[in-house]
Amino acid sequence: MALRFIAIDPDTDDDGSPTIWEDENGDLIIQSYRADAATLAACVEAGSSPGHSTDVPPHETVIRLPARMRQFLAQP
Image (cartoon, rainbow, N blue to C red; front, side):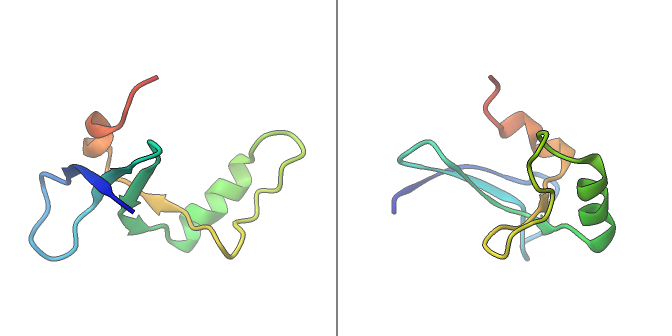
């Protein structure tokens, strides 16, 4: 899989950094902070599309991307 580097958190040190890449299909690949239990509970409470489960399946995860990195995400 070929990835194109988009950005790294400009306020990070050299040891583990929120980073964004894009693959050949346009999918974003994001390395960032794993959401803690309180954030996961807030996701469940906030809900999702009607009729859609709010459980996070084993093959997925929830991450927290610093707000300062929004500038690097594609806008609709």
